[in-house]
Amino acid sequence: MRHALVFAAGLGERMRPLTDRTPKPLLMAGGRPLIVWHLEKLAAVGVHYVVINTSHLADQFPETLGDGSRWGLRIRYAYEGPTPLETGGGMRNALSLLGPEPFIALSADIYSDYDYARLPLEPAGLAHLVMVPNPDWHAAGDFTLDAGQLTEQGPGERLTFGNIGVYRPEFVRDHAPGRFKLLPLYQQAMRTGQLSGERYDGFWRNLGNPAQLAELDAQLRGG
Image (cartoon, rainbow, N blue to C red; front, top):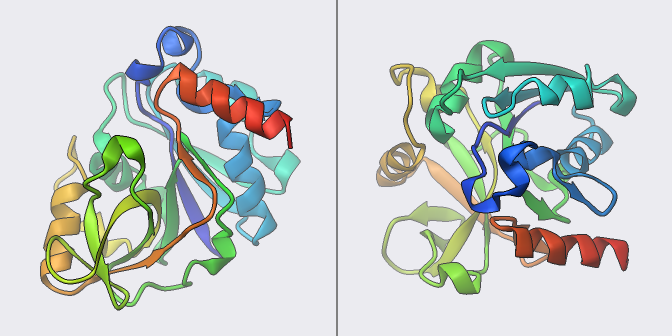
């Protein structure tokens, strides 16, 4: 059984005023909360245990999603306190709930038709990331993909991290708890050849502001 972590603790500042009363992952698109699209897809590929990290308006998550049984899931909540711990701190905070095996991790504030069944059961190194073509708002990309390996610079194609990946617990296990980003750990793993990746050319959207959310809602409603 594979486990998954869904990042849902952000403040959603660029999505205001929508996020003043509703956490970003619970905003509606296509007739359901953003995070539910992920839960349904995870359940469809055999994931039965999901950890959701929370902070901003945290009480709304169990009120809306419950224990996950309606999707055939078991949901646990990893509360980070009133201040989100960033991606690294959030992952580190959730490790005790995720178990010893590699796990899927993804951001609740994206939408994609990527099939999670494509993800490796175990990354070749410490982590495996899904990369997408650079959107207009991030033309410089994040990392370079060359023959399945990710590097900061060098030969290969510059792509943007799609906020979907598979991680071994040891990727963050030895880091001190607290608030920190994953980027320095990605950089360290790349320097030692421990970060693999793949390119995905299908539908992928990052939902950063109300206009992007409205566009996605119209697309989903229009089929």
